[in-house]
Image 1 (cartoon, one colour):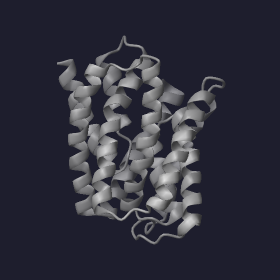
Image 2 (tube, one colour; image 1 turned 60 degrees about the horizontal axis):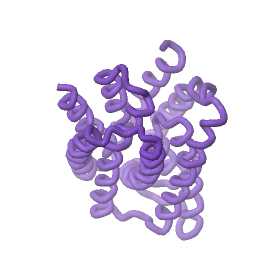
Image 3 (cartoon, helix red, strand yellow; image 1 turned 90 degrees about the vertical axis):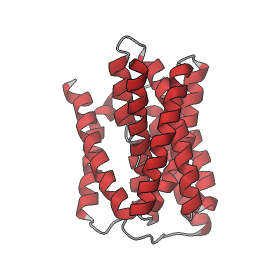
Amino acid sequence: MELVTVALASLLAGFVDAVVGGGGLVLVPALFSVFPTAPPATLFGTNKGGAVWGTAWATLQYARRVTLPWHALAPAAAAALLGSFVGAWTVTLVSAGGLRRSLPFILLGVLLYTLAKKDMGRHHAPRYSGRAEAWVASGIGLLIGFYDGFFGPGTGSFFVFLFVRLLGFDFLHASASAKLLNTATNCAALLLFALKGHVWWQIAAVMAVTNVLGSLIGTRMALARGAGFVRGMFVLVVSALILKTGWDAFLR
């Protein structure tokens, strides 16, 4: 029954992650609920072991249907990978407590800005090209990659928001681009957890199968319904993140 529960949670997480990111909102609490006595690092590592496959699958599906600026995304993914490693190393030296308390307010700012700019992300109109686009994308990758390694909640949503706001992508192209960078940061985190022995591979394998299935469903819905659907999901996920991070920071 425990395995069935986390498998179903992974299915839903794969769907959410494929559309706009934020699958950890579903899967991480499910793992903590089902395995309350397990070491947190092991649950986080197992989460990455299952979720990285759905994110990678979504990247491949989007790449087949959406034209992506690979000249910018390839170096951005490398920067995100580097940033994630540096962030994970930094968290061993300093506390993330200040960021934990400020995160709900940062996310609230993102949500209010998105709601105020009703046309933001509805039309795909890239602001840069060539090397300029690669530099801006790499800056986003390095910054949010560092954040993912250092703390983590909302990484996918931050990638999407910055691709829309800074690069002029619509929400569909931003989500598709974010998947590649999120795959890089997830791989970095998974490698670190695996080297420390904090992954239950047998559970992660089952979760991976259902996560890919959820990812397939989510990707197809996003491609079929377009940027407006992804924007709506973005608002829902960021709203949920505000509640979750606010609870963790001030009420837990």
